[in-house]
Length: 627
Figure 1: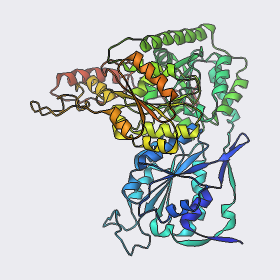
Figure 2: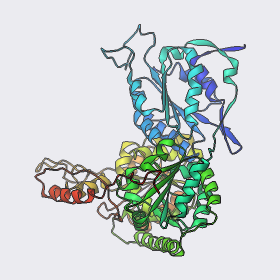
Figure 3: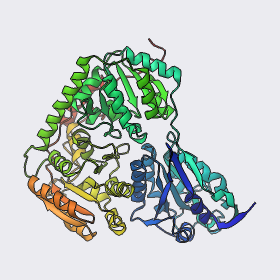
């Protein structure tokens, strides 16, 4: 058997650059390269290996959390058919990746993490930045990755990668099990050499399957749908990842069943499709939420039913509501005592369409969906053209960006008040045109995520919409985007703090406490003095961005037109009125309110909360065997 003598770090890079995926006959490289920030824990190991492998491109990030966000966004944009590795030093570099690693796992997105680790041989311990515990010498900060990784291993001998790396790829390329994968790499072992089998580095193609639904369960689903009078489809991210948008549109048109969308599933149908009810749940449209409340059958496709989707288990109020869940993951398919169709979304829809070729909902129900679609579109137009202020409303900012964008352009967001408004208001025209990280809703994702989207598809314009709160948490990857030549258009909305959580604070009776960027007042001792004079335009310019400042809707539209002509990352700064919010429609979210308080506002909110909470349900009364 031929062998190649390599360090453990060199072996990892050599292995990664020969991994491919294939789906529907299309083959492509799985890893687009490696993001990293070097320290003593990886510079002489993985760093040296990357330097010796220029065909496995290294990207220098500015923040370890940001580089994992970028990798996750890239994976999302490629429908999980490609990703990056991310390497950091031991200690703070590694733990900086924790937040984004949790986001990748929650959102079911493949990312490979290669954090440096403390010395395996232990004789020089404690090394710089090493965690010491009196109870064990076999724990480091990298053990924090265990609960948020879909696969975790510590490589204490160089030959262990022969067994570990294929397992890591098995998880990363699994539609059902994917997420963050962590291989903790002791810095001494990274540099140790071993005679690796040459065949270990041969090209390997991982086939991404399209599992077909069980025939018996599919027949049961046909029966349930055929006897349903008011069925509703909830399209989740699995529709997008499966590339099932066309199959969903065909199925909806054939059966007349209307479609509502989760944050991850938005774009499954074009906004103007007559059966598109738009967003569902806490951030949903009135049409989607009214239909959901009355539906006797919910067909969930590729959704994990977050509390925002189910409105904290209050969305579905039909006394005999049942669920059919089409999902690649058994865990999600079984939720709500559903009839579980464990299968690829596109394959299941295509087979279900054949089974239901003689079924369609009543014309009145189909027509009602079309009417609700038109009514909502008129409401969106009203909000887009509110003529509020200045400062203008956030809804008007969204409208201006939507109108400036082309059908295939992408909007990126993650946290604050923007995701809720975007979910309702953004007019999607392309299945990949709406990119929201809302499984974790992580502040700071936006700019780093926008970079990942742009790297995945450089031909699309990418509009990053971010509030001032998220921008201040992580704007570092503006520099990376400029360094690598990936242009982003960043629309920075200044509302002087955390407007979304401020609104929630007001709703629970706490008056927006601690959510506005203000000086501390000497009179009250609280943060309720004058507004902080942060110069966002100057900050963005200092990072190398082209900057435009807008004061009202006409100047915003002008700035967006100018931004489109730029070749480098551009930031458009606009102030918005934090008090002019897009209302919630026919929905509720369970945020527990203090049972005892001296604040009359809190006491009043608690009384309303107790009433609303009574609508929460356990969806398990109509189990699989029920007729």
